[in-house]
Image (cartoon, rainbow, N blue to C red; front, side, top):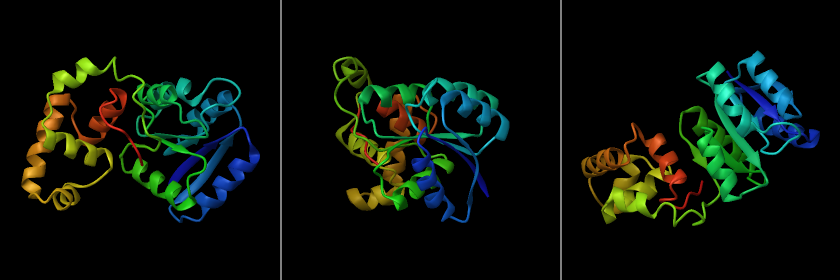
Length: 210
C-alpha cells in the first residue's frame, strides 16, 4: 500500500483527487495540506511514498520544499499537479528533482497511470517543453553529437517506450536499441534512462509529452 500526501489550497481539488486515488486499491491518502508550510511539515512527519502537490499555493512552493523533503526521505517521489504549463516552471521543477509534472485537466485514468509510473521510478513530464532555451542549449546539443537514429530513440525514451517497443516502432532489433541507448547514456553522462529524460528536459533536447 503506497502512502500519498495531497497538497492543494482548494478543498474541492483535494476532494476530487481523493476520489480518483481512492479508486485504486494500492494507494491510501495519509494526509492533506493547504499551503506550502503545512506541506513541508506533513511530508516530514508522515513520510509518504508520494507527494502530489499543486505548484502555486500560499507560502513556499513544492519546488522550494522538494530538496528538503527528499533529503529527509530519499525514497519519496514528488509530483506536481498544476494549471500552469510555463516552460520556466517545468525547468525549475526539473532542477528541484521533481519526479512528475502533469496538468489539472488530465483525465483521472491518466493521473493514476502517471502516479504508477512515478512510483516505479519513471520521470513523467506532461506539458511540451518549448524552445525558450534553445539558444542557451545549442552548445549542449552540438557537444552531444547524437546520430539521427539516437535522436529518434532518445525521443522514444522520453515517451516512456521500452526497448522492445522502440525496436518494433523503428523496425530494428532489440539488441540494436540497447546499443543505441548505451551510447545515449554515455554521451549525456547519465546513469539510467530516467536521468536521461530529466537531462533532455533540462537542456531542451526534445519536446516532452506524457
